[in-house]
Image (cartoon, rainbow, N blue to C red; front, side, top):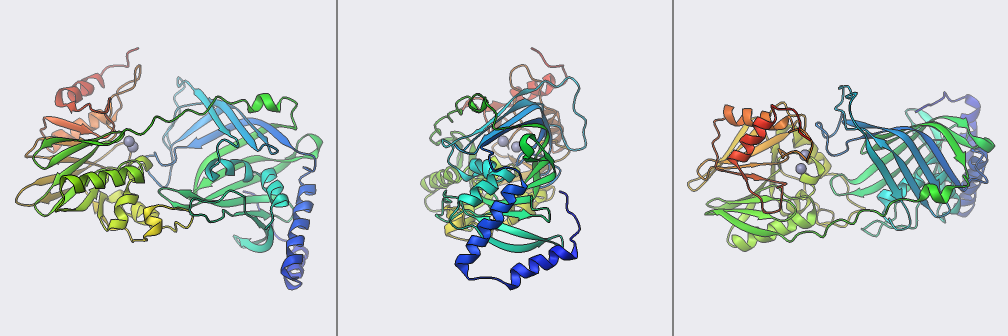
Length: 490
Ligand SMILES: [Zn+2]
Ligand SMILES: [Zn+2]
């Protein structure tokens, strides 16, 4: 983000605005006057739609090796983004190349897949709508139309900014308004826009868009050469703009997007007894319930609060006299931690890899004023135990071992679980390849880890089975290990 040093003259102007603060109603009019002035400075008085081309890069948010830094990223070529502010609607297309771990080089033979992202009145969540309103043009158009536009000042890294704030009509699941802040620099154009969005893991998640170095497009409309977005402080999307069309004649065609995929209906949870006091819960995500003398342990919370609540209800049905004391989280990818929201308000201790301990504690301690889930209604400090290498839960009736898996590209904080008496292995994300793809390098690492730990098993319970009821056998895992040594077959 570009910041210029502040001249003494402009500081005086800001001080003048501050000291001459008028009553609230006039203050609101001042805010609208500043917005109108910014719209003129941006040359966007007659802008109704924009289409820009360039390249982009998307970070693997919530699914990278390190969950909070050094995200793996993927390049998008032939990138086109079109926004019609009158609808409002947005459509972005391109050719997306496979994810590349941080510090690694992209393979020259990698083939792209189509990138397609669309926002329309049919996608009425703030997470999608904010894509339109956190652009410099969308922000100022929204500020001009909003009923509650305000003007304040704030310093960013010591540089004073005039800050315009407004709320969209759309309300958060908690009923609260969302809020946007736009930071006007000394040239009267926006350096940054921020907002907050409800997120199942990060609570009220901070969203920031930074605009670098404005250039003139047709008709003198100001367009930044780079837009970078951050979610929860992590850079997750960067656009490098090379060309822009203002009010393109073919805007309707550019906005034509394939219908959004209809997510399959969630499969109801069902349970299957694997041994006395050991149940596999199937459905969309697999969990394992393990009974001890005085309590129950859940392996894997599920991908959502709803699934976590269903897992807890099933534990109560199967073991009505015992409480769930621990929930084991295999690794911190969002689809594996989101279900913890059901467990934390109940005071259930989360056991996770020590590399994830701080993340789980911090994420689920964030404010959740925009959400309407169990943790937002019943605030509770998460209790989290970190497993450094190995951890054993043991009493007179049962033994459950947890082990860290080292050197994995998939996650730096991965646990596997093993029930030695029942000879059951439980893992997440060591899955067979999709058709035509090579076996993932994680499979040989898992087999090496099992050898080192002298883990022998008959049944391998996986969190994402091939089909909902599939239970991987030892032979299937060994066959995957052998296939990993051969090149991929078509
Ligand atoms: Zn994962
Ligand atoms: Zn997974």
